[in-house]
Image (cartoon, rainbow over all chains, first blue to last red; front, top):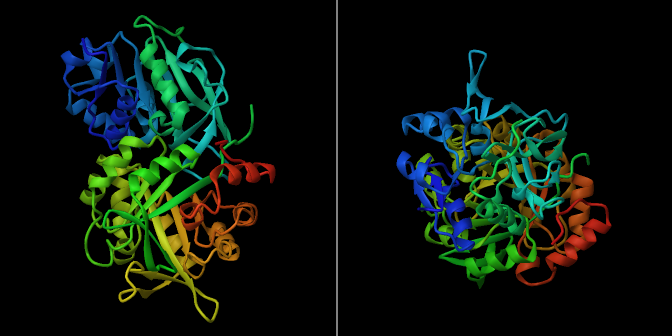
Length: 209
Length: 261
């Protein structure tokens, strides 16, 4: 059994994510094959780009249903995290938000930051609000963000970060997890999050939001 | 909850020519300072927040960036990095990003074809697309945009006033602006705080200062007085004149929010 499969969405940060796991001594399988994804011990959903383009790519690959039904630990990164939510204001058309996979019951919204610059780009601090094995050793750590959309703090929030107002830095609901920052580019703290993900009990489950 | 804890970024810049990191003074007289992968790794471990690699000859002699080292760097470092130099199309950008670069920066090609900025944003998202601007203050005190600065014989002034080009680049979707103040490049007399403050006032996306860093106080000044999001520097790091640890410690003591090393 492959321990780690990375969904091959052909997105721009795929190589960086693979390299980050290789630095941890893990050789992930990069695949869009439903059978391989179902069989993996854990699954990572990367993402860079726009919500609409990324969902279209998942649909082209026939993967939305496959991903929703996974029962092993699944981690979405950045846009990959936002795709786990039920909808995004990014790529909204005719007043309708872009639907997501809906496995985390929260919306993705354009960030409201007052006079601050967007994108929110750079190193910012994690505040763990609900302890989880995924966040072991990470309270107060600095991690690297690049985004203009975010998930408001809510029932599935495990950690938050402030920029204008607090937003969800890390989400968890059932076997689905998400990180808004880029662990593959967040130095030792990012490596710790990925290692924690690899260490998660395959039956790990966050309380339903 | 803390309010915004977004930290100011310290960004070593590595000029790459023929696969080697080089450093010149006011874009001239380059000397080799080392291997890009080894230097990238050293800076990442020292606590740099981000790296920028400029293929300094790529735009002026019509080549695109040599791609081999991009992947080598992505493999070893765990902080973000941006690649600049001769990216003239969506396909060229895709190749650099697919090798593991986090951002691409366009300079002369965006001046020649401003539509390129929007095309890159549409394809890869605003967060990937940096516009680099080489700005020179003329004798009358005007800030003017230059292009092809990697090659002395081809360097030329454009029609653009710097503030106008910043506004235009942002309007077309640029996710970040790197302002290279050419008068200050490599001479280590301090960032051009006045020019950067003027650009800051018209720039709603992250702004990175470039050109002139020579002492730790220069970093403090540019963050305090120009309000930039990041400060880029080359020779002070390459020559070991400033250590990352000392820089961040002093910035923190001066009240500038930085990520500890």
